[in-house]
Length: 433
Image 1: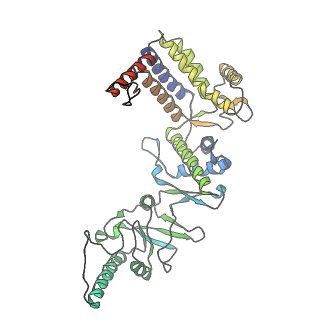
Image 2 (image 1 turned 180 degrees about the vertical axis):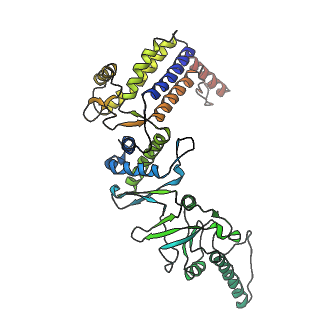
Image 3 (image 1 turned 30 degrees about the vertical axis):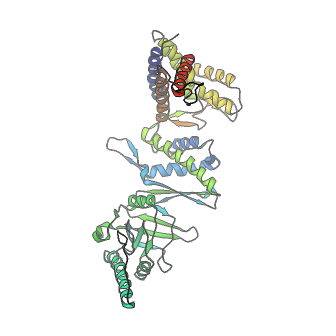
């Protein structure tokens, strides 16, 4: 018997108050606090495929985020994940994963005679095929003599030679090309001692642009020496990978290994989540105890706050507090524990002043989860509370539901069955309402 408007207002008040309590409970953390950030990463990976090696992977994740973190003028920290690339390989255990400066390109040289390692590399990133230019429209050419055929072949060879000369004239000795490279052009490039890679993925080429600080060239006719980047190229023949590092590299690559494609895909998903969580923690600078501790503490404070709320909105605030305790209840049920007993224990611990008391799903005991290493980011908790309240209020604002009902044209013997079906739907709606 409470009008939705009162519930919406109460939920809004509770959401605002809850987010304020999150900020009050949160502990500050700096990018230099490596131990806390590792705990955040481990908490994020718990329950996922990456949990088995979470100690090693958590350190790699923290190092990855640290490699792309810069301090802004106002003293805050900015994490630019555009400079992070994740490359996956199969055939080894996840414990072999490593973090590398620069980029890793899973490609082979286009010609066997090309150098594999280039220490003083001048790199060209190219988004234009090194091939014979084809006509824009369908054409038909009649050849009447061998000389005419040879003339066409010579012209094609000249075009390819000119493209290679454009590359060599500016001083490039490494080419990463997103498009194709003609067999004859491969020969010319190898003869000039240039390392060339074709069909480079668009995402890899974009990451190389960040790592090397070089533009992606789309027209060889406009190529200049300023379009080249300086760095080093190293080839791992066993893995079939190129390691690319720029002189002023700002990018890092997390090389993940897994025994099978399925394993490494699941591992990558867990790592991506953990990187996002650690990056958010670094930029936000706040952490919270996990294991349901925050939800029980906020619920307790919301019930105290509800006493100061007048009208029926007070009941909505109390209902909001009850809903937060669903988190520790579900945690207990998923761990095969008695959710009612544990919730009672959690409430008692928080009433006694232990704001960090949460659930240890392994022992089934209530303990200080912050000390146990179960740590979450405060910003994500604030966002979850805000989004949940907005979603609930959006549903509460729905005044009526229009049911489609039976829209078939098969009536009960009368013509115009479709309108009859529609009216049946309206009747159904009235009954449902």
